[in-house]
Structures are given as C-alpha cells and as structure tokens.
Length: 246
Image (cartoon, rainbow, N blue to C red):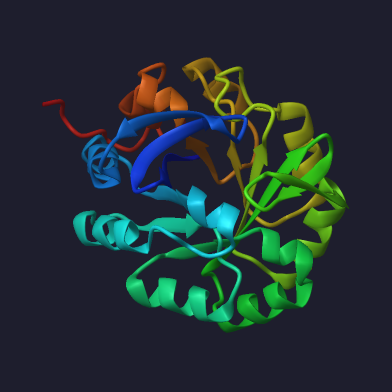
C-alpha cells in the first residue's frame, strides 16, 4: 500500500481544510515546494497535489506553483482541481504530471472521461468524493444526484488508472477512514482504489492494511505530526528501506 502525502494549494500556499470547508483553512507552508521536498526527503514515492482554487473556479489557478513543484522534486505526482478540458489535461501531462485527476467534469460529461482514458491510457485518475451517499462536485461545494456506487460502476467502464475515494465527512478530522463504505466500493469495482480522508494515526493505517487498496493519501496527520511519514511507510510497505534520519 503506497503512502501518498497530500499537498493542497490555495492562494499559492500549502493548506489543509476540515471536511472541505474553505473557511476552516490552516496554512502549513507559505511555499508548497517546501512541503513537497519535505515529503520526498522523508521517503515519499508519490505526491497528491490539488489546486483548491481551481476546484472552485473550474480551471487550475496555481499552475505556476505546480511548475515549481515539478521542477523541484524527482518523484512523480498526480494533480487535480479544476481540470475540465482536454486542453488542460494535455498541458498538465506535457508539464510532467504523472496522472491527471478528474472529478466534476466526469459527472457532467461521462463521454469526456471515456475519450481521455482512451487517449491517455494509464494517465487518468478519477476522484469520487462522497457526502451523504452522493458524489460531491465543484470543490465539494455541491452535491450531485448520483449515488457513490453507481458513479463508481459507470466510471470503471471508461478504464481509468485509479479511483481516488474520499469521504468528505472524514477529511481533515483525523477520526479515521470510512472503512465500511470503502469495503462496499472495493466489492463494486476492480479498478485500483486509493483512499483519502480521515487518517489520523498508525492504527488507522493498520485498519486499511488488509484491504486490497493501492494507496492511501494522508494530509493533516502528516502536517500536524500525528503520523510520521517514515513510520507510515514502514508499516504499509515493510520491505522497503526508509531513508536515514537527519
């Protein structure tokens, strides 16, 4: 199970929200590049980068910050937030993004996902963010009428590289992932699943470890120190050597 640190960007800074509420923002780094480099230095093999301003506006707003991150780190990353056109997807991949994350556009235009998954095989992931059993869109500010599992079934038909599942009610709370709903999702699809939201301790990772998931995105727990990245990597991938301390 891959441990993937989150780098969420708003207003050019690295921040964390609670349950997706923009009014509950904590700034951890004035320069998100510092966060990305920290996680790379501590052993991360992959990063999860989200443009929160882009998710709200419908187009990426922190491309310059993303460029700086890509120029600074050597590990691959996936990027999402406001990606709603073919041109944006192409630009991001040309910049060096390993995987592009789609969300709102998939709900609005399923055929868009089919086309992109065919054109960019293995380079498209889909974010399925749920609240009250429905898929949330537009930076988590709106609820669609689409049930989570129905959405997952439809998305899988297009052949994305991965599904990124977030329970919004758990995100940023450190209260643990929604394993009950996660199990239902895993029983519904065969596409690799990455889970996000609620990780607050190593015990939460132990709960996920027996499940057939590809990775786990961790945000607030790493930034607050509730979880050590090196310990999380050792727990989730014990055969991989962790880098020496400073």
